[in-house]
Length: 242
Figure 1: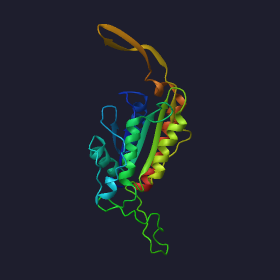
Figure 2: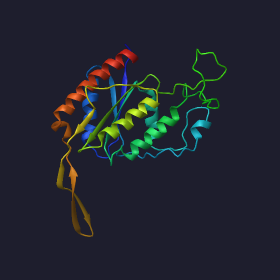
Figure 3: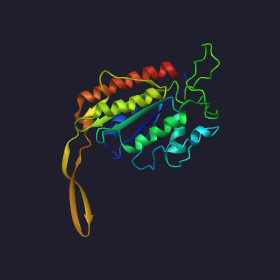
Figure 4: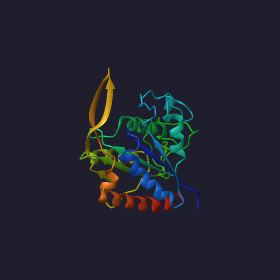
């Protein structure tokens, strides 16, 4: 069996938060089965959204006009990986902006390509699939074709289904095989902690509340769902990419 590599991407803006802990739990389980894993965190990264400049479409090999912490470093890891697991907290019913920007650009750089070096020929999209008689060219499968995807979402109370659907839909449009669990891969129940954050301004101190970082420990059902997800992920990854 080839050595397998899974990349986790944590979209949270908080270091050591609930999303990071959930991803760590799953990646540790994969690592215990001999799978190489890596966790990329976005809280300290400069990542911008896609500008739809079409530069990546015009260039013969993969290239992005925006040079930041996503391209080329994180993008190259995504292309190398056999599987990708996305993690996101719920921000106003959706995923955080940095993660959204990363997914926009990662999708644009991949779509329609058959390799990093091969130009995108989108003049005749949509065309017939290979094997069907037609003089039209078909759209390439993208750089993530055949990779294994999965998503985890954390939330204080609600909004998780919309955020989870957003992540899963990205996998599905990018030609991944998506792994499920015995229930939604969602951790619920962060608590509001009064006066947990302090700021100083002009000699005065100001306090505000924050969310607790113990959701993984508190949500027993959520932990079980992540265990089932990790086991399913290992099986699917080994069958498809091993």
